[in-house]
Length: 263
Image (cartoon, rainbow, N blue to C red; front, side, top):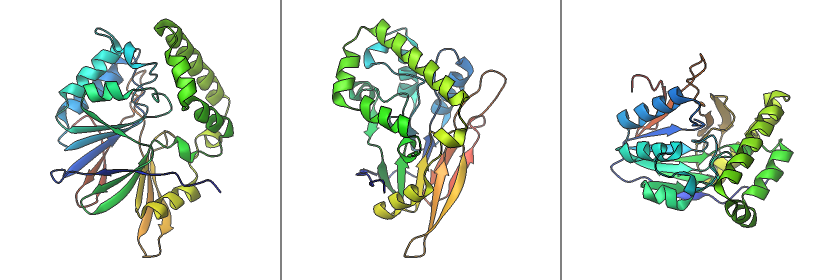
């Protein structure tokens, strides 16, 4: 049985009435329409807080990549322009986002997973890759690259070398996914999700990563409360397709999926 991890805690300030959740935008300069949709959403949101649950970036090779004039720097400017409180949890593509970058742009650094205490409700927030326990090769890779030794060695390489390595890793990942059924590598373990909720005394788990937005019932706890697993949408607004969604939480506990266009 997979061990339940230690949860971080985010206690919402009293002034929060609505919280927006997004994940898996995979921002990159090759997809300018996705970037613009995100930038417009961040400028226009009426939520008191925006929580980004990982993979905001297609790749992040170190905070030094966010030099003036770079695409990463433009992303930082969008964060600066957002009037909502911001929080960020690292994903499998941007796990190297540093505390320095987040601090410069006034973004709260979230542990994975984190319990959000908001208006009398408790929710578990996670990127989602930790729940995909059936993908054993990925979990082994994750354990390696999340280690301090691997990250120190990688970040010590010259920036162009890190960028080339990241490109190779993306190509390898895309080739693997193209040859594998999504259920084999992007399936979140429902039984594990339920154990997380019970351990956190929470009723709703919100995550991304799988790119399969849906709401999944997970039964009830001992108090008879309904447990739910809510999967966020990925974003892709280039190449003739449009897939983007914000999940908005109100103080009443209601969750609403919103098209970012009219926000």
